[in-house]
Amino acid sequence: MNRETLVRSIQTKKSFLCVGLDSDLSRIPKFLLNYPDPIFEFNRRVIDATKDYCVAYKPNVAFYEALGTGGWQALAKTLDYIPKTHLTIADAKRGDIGNTSRLYAHTFFSTFDFDAVTIAPYMGYDSVSPFLEFDDKWVILLALTSNAGSKDFQFLQDNEGRHLYEHVLGKAASWADADKLMFVVGATQAESLQQIRNIVPDHFLLVPGVGAQGGSLEEVYRYGKNAEVGLLVNASRSIIFAGGDTEDFEKSVSDAARTLQQEMESLMSR
Image (cartoon, rainbow, N blue to C red; front, side, top):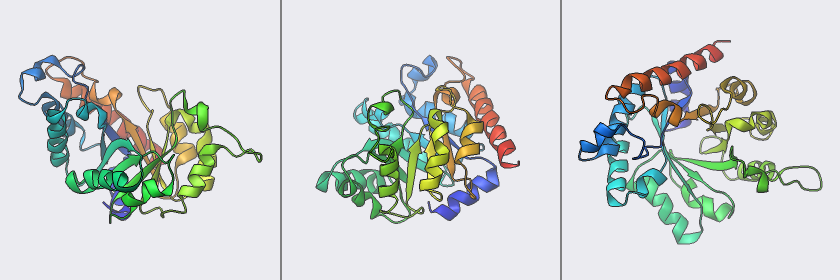
């Protein structure tokens, strides 16, 4: 999916919601365990309940690969089921060099045909470049994350007071333009979004942490938006597990997604 299509989808739906498919087998409604593929059945129902309110889906690959062959099959079926009108993100956080990186790129952009994949940039340009070779695909680099450990490295400062994450943003922005490259910025780091926008004014930001992690959607939008919105705000647990262990969980899932979309529409109309 190219940038023009993504921007048009955001404007048409009045939504910049990404639904994270962190489909934990231990948390899905128990009645689904009677199905041949419980994870796919859960995802199928979540997608049906949320597709009108979101513009993207982000399966967290860890929840699938932990299940072995069956998990990879569930991921493939899930990807095939997601409407082609929605951006698909493999939350894989890969990062390696040489042939290994090239094969990771092939895995998520050819074998699975995701639109985007998350990458850890610590090993530098040659670990990222194989992913940039694919047309109409996105690389989403970790820049400033929402976990407590982000302070261990990401906020280290040089002699001029610039943080490590600012160096990552500035350097990576020279590798590819805003049509191929996005950055992950945690919603709990909203106070840094304004400075991030000074460094990468045009790039999309994938923002996890709204919902279960307590990030403020209003603050993310205020400090992080650009002329095209330029945001994909991800919510996972707060949406997909909203129905608890009930057989009609889809209604609560749909309500949770619609509530976030309506809040986004309100912010976009200001």
